[in-house]
Image 1 (cartoon, rainbow, N blue to C red):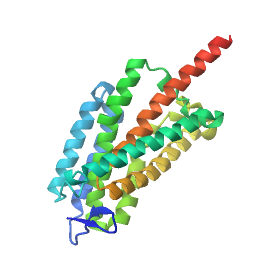
Image 2: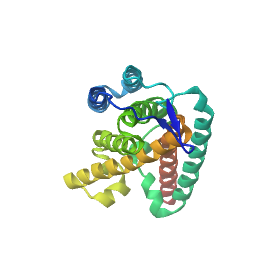
Image 3: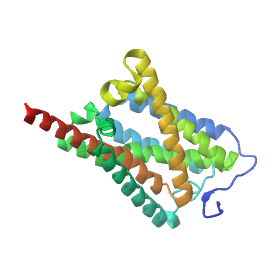
Image 4: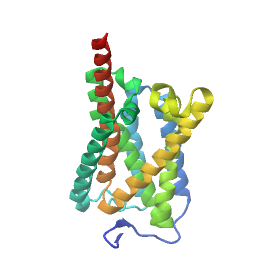
Length: 256
C-alpha cells in the first residue's frame, strides 16, 4: 500500500517489521559490489548486474514489498517516463553549457573515455550503463532498499539512509579516478592523499545524487524517473567526454 500525500508516492510505514531482511540486503550489496569491482571480469559485468538485480528484487518481494512499493508499479509507468525524459533533457542542457566554458569543460577530460573506440563508447553508454549500472543501482537503492527502509523507519530516514549507503557503494569504483581525470586530480592532488580525497568526494557527490534520485522516485512513483536521470549523468557524460577529448586532440594536432 502506498501513501500519496500531497502528490508524493512512497511506501507506508509498518510497525514491527524485522530488521534482519535489511541486513541480508546490505550483505548482498557488499558481495555484489566486490564481485563487480574486484572479482568478475569486465566482460561479465552485465551478467552480474542482471543476476544482482534479480536477487535483490526477490529479497524485496519476500520481505513483503509490492511492486508499487518498490516503484515498479504499472500505474506509475507514464509519470516515470515523463520525469525520466525531462531529466535527460535537463542534463543535456547542463552538459552543453558546461562544455562551452573552459573551466567546466575540463571536468569531461577523462582519459579512460577518450581511449575508447567509437563502437566501444556506444556499447558502454547505450548498453552497459543503462542495462548494467543504472538497472542494478536503481533496483538496489531506489526500489528494494528504499522501500524496505521506508516501511520500517519512514520516508525521510529512508531517503537519508539509502543515499548514504549509495555513496559508500562508490568507494571501490572511485579508487584511482584522480589519475584518469586531470580536472579531479588538479583539485584533490596526487598520490595517496589525492586518492583518499577523490574517494571522499565520490562518496559525498553520489550520496547527494542518491537524495535527488530518491526524490524523483517519490515524486513520480516510479524508478524510471531516477533511471532516466542516472543514465543521463553517466551515459551522456561518456558521449560529451569522448567528443570533447577528440575535438581537443584534433585541434592540437591541427595546430602543430
